[in-house]
Length: 79
Image (spheres, rainbow, N blue to C red):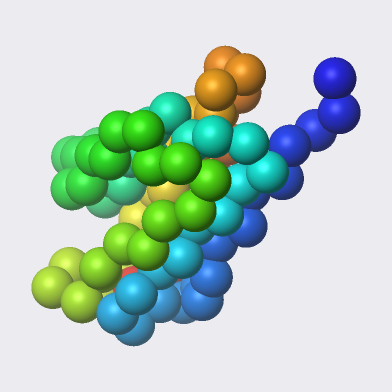
C-alpha cells in the first residue's frame, strides 16, 4: 500500500485553491486555527477547486480524507 500524494496549490492562496489526489477524495475539511470548520466538501472526486476568495487572510488547516481511510492535513495560508 504505497503512500497516496495529495497536491494543493497555490499556497499561499489568493482566490482559488486546487486540491488533487491520486485516488478519490471522500471529504475535504478546511478549518481555521480556532478549530471552526469553514468549508466541508463531500465526494470531491480526484480533484476539486475551492473558492477561498471570501475567507479572511490567515492560516487554515486543510484536511483531506481519502477513500482508503488515510487523512492528510496541511497548513494553507490565505493572502
